Image 1: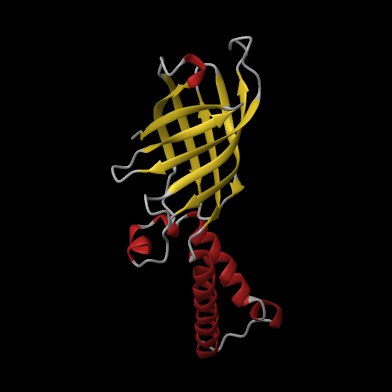
Image 2 (image 1 turned 60 degrees about the vertical axis):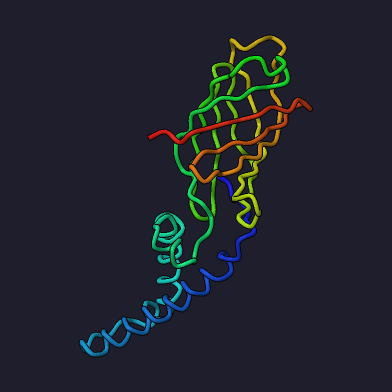
Length: 193
């Protein structure tokens, strides 16, 4: 997986909230240990705030950011795109005459993402990405990818890089465009159960 950027301000606010919570947890732990007449060495006590912060950050990054309550509170606006998406693309290469089936697997945490696309003739993976949430038309996933043809692909098909821009619709579909070797194409996907 690789990092992705976003135009949401949550990545400035949430770490601050996690740091405050970590300090509070360290303080409560210290008070509880003192009340229990239990003494810990200085090297355990000193980094406790950092340890709590690291644990909270990892928990939030991998798990908590996906929870609907976190989204309802407005702490997170980045959409969770994790899943297996099935769809098709049409390309100018064949005059938009044929639907080419594809599957996209998206693996995502709060700070990392990777997009794998497979078709009967090639596979690709993302190398950079951005999720824009402040777009007036809805959230958008934009990523750059590297595509590798499979052994039985057409002889004219070569490894190439490209860019895809997928808009997240209200009904939970992804639709958009991709550009590869100056040949634009349209793309449409549904999340599989």
